[in-house]
Image (cartoon, rainbow, N blue to C red; front, side):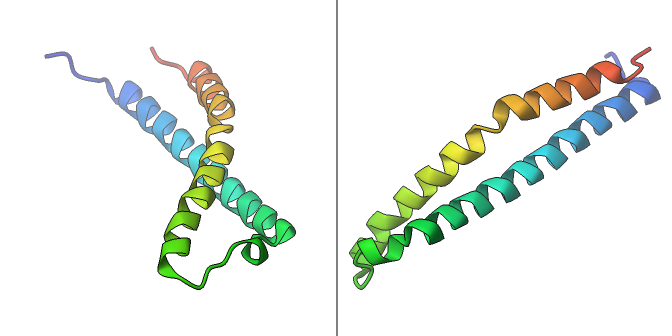
Length: 91
């Protein structure tokens, strides 16, 4: 079985750490953006949230809004991590 050299292992750990950092930043930005949008649109005034059924139906709308914002960061995350991985010395 082929084992990683210490340098390769260190590089892979650095790539995964960079990916995690980018994902944390993307998560924070997408949550704050959706929160700001919901506040700006005052979404709670347009939806009757007094019954459990209306809350259950309202939750997927917020989740979908967050998903769209979060997935928009995917190309940027891939570009940053690819660039970072390319700058590492692998041999």
